[in-house]
Image (tube, rainbow, N blue to C red; front, side, top):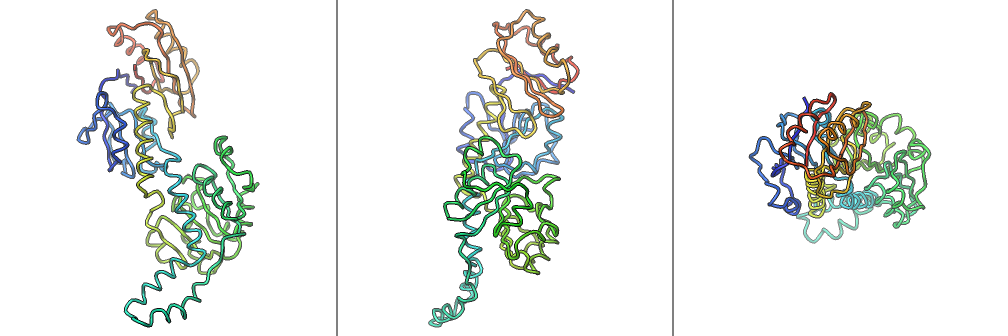
Length: 399
């Protein structure tokens, strides 16, 4: 059932510890942070699992302070007209640094060497001699001159590719959906792979930076391992589900994969040979958490105050400069004559339209309309009712 509301003081609820720098974005005159509220205007979350939650009729937005939204029931939100934001790029530098660190450390057998050295505790004066005698087992390889394959050239992948070039690696990238903004930021020295199979075949190291979808699930498997160079190192700082773990275990045993570095440990991973399991530290820096919190808060604040949408995963992105005039926003089915019906409902009250924008995304669309006249507050309920009667409206607001 469609809903229409007029904005007042907005309530924000957090379901995880959110950096204070992000919460400060919500000015106290217009927003209240109330974590006891059962029906807030917006949630700001990190990894809290929201799939079992029931959403109140006031909920308009959920912002994930991070890139992945697997913990949010996105389809349910879309059906109820709740915009879901994420923060792509806010943690990109943190993840990039972890990828580069792991790339070098794994190539030089640094993790295994450190663990072995720690085991010499208690050997007293013999430690230096034991170190000299045992270090040969940890002789590694330099990454200079080797080929790094980067799958996914978004915010993180582009940074990894550029820094790997600075380390004198050859870099080959694959991303059929690369954005114009990323293309501008990507070094021209990154070789373009015409297919993912080409990248698999040419790379000494492979790092993956794509979302988990039905199409990417298990993309690293027996078939794709057979294309790769023997002894390839695979780095996964995106999602554990991108890897078929049964096939990975066999590939590691057979030496087809020389090393698997993952930020997503589980019982299967911990039992694998030649695997470095990192406790999900990719984005775990103070700077990253603050960047994500600030970006998430700004997106929610902008949406609640103006209706503008940026970095939504389920609504179309749409921006209309806000001049302080009354603004009607509507999320609706993407069917013919919806905009005409909305504008007719407004003009029926002898109101002029100053500006408008309409954007679509799949089966849904989002419309913002600025009213040129001074609007008497007494007629707002009538305008609401008119809009509410339009078949296909999911949610609407008057700002």
